[in-house]
Image (cartoon, rainbow, N blue to C red; front, side, top):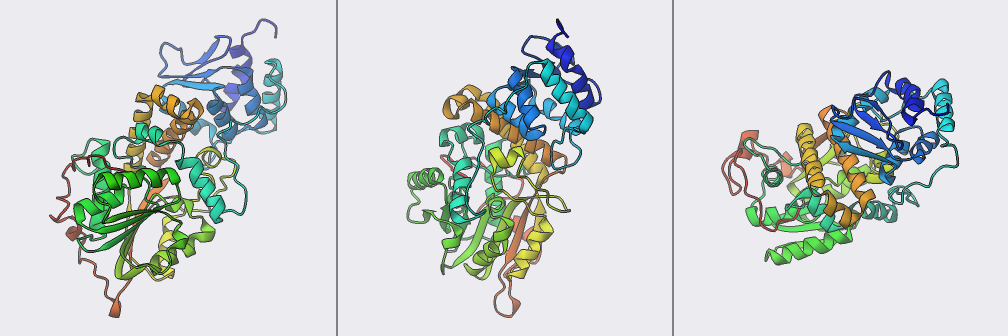
Length: 449
């Protein structure tokens, strides 16, 4: 083995994993390469040290690869999507990377690590890896999960999300070409479904940085309450409400949805919060929101969902350890059933899968365009986490591995009255928010979920 390059020593392992040469370039710490010639490659995987191999040895799955990338032991130069395309060669199901390691593959991995001098104890996981304590989906643990994701710095989120600070799937209506306009169109789309008008009272659950309540108050004249358990979001959303001169009509609370009590609202929106509820709390969540609605009041539940079939455990996934700890996705049929079991009449369900793929690509473009500022704001490891997660999720939505649905439910009034329009067309008629297909101008100083 003496005199052989790192690339030569790792070539058998790479070929065993991929079934042949990689479609991107791979460059190792000694400068040797395998795969696509670097001058022709759209992307290059840079393996910076033996520690990357040792991480894979101790965690031969997507978690090992993610730890290596977050820690900087592996880097990606060029098109991140080109590298992520390798997942279709590595994954044996839709849950995640399995790397195809049978007994022979594991022996090959150990031999390769030994030849590279990479044997040793497991490296410490990056500090960004989240390990929550306490009962799953208890209040304290849920607050910890939310803080780990959302309280990473408003400046960092502004670089990624853009001026609207809206952290949920946009709505790319006809003629819309910019992320800001698509995010405002999303809010308008929801406001139409909820039939908001002056004098009504809106609750936005998981209000983020305040985008929905600001839009609804400005464009539809409602009184609105937004609740969040993120202190960073609460502070900035409150400042945005004050700056907009809407403090008499919009209230931002640091509050858990489980503490809503006997208040009554005409409409409820929940945008990008549903993923944090958990299956054990799903019925409680639906019951509480049903209870705060007046008769003929509507709920718009906007949440990421999973394809049909049994749920797969995510405890060793990159997403669970670094992005959404304790996050749980549900099949849309389960969502509809639970809402109806607690009393809602479900009137509409709309998939926005392709819309979210496009939104995520826009966020990745923002992050990469502002990379140095993002690293200065939140650190290189945090920027790497967000780049990997957003790019990977974009591909998941594009390829149908992940879904997102808006589900509209109504609390019936006396004698079954719903207050619903007779057709969907009536949602899109000219009103206070303009017409469908109009490119909505971005709100100056807007905030978002």
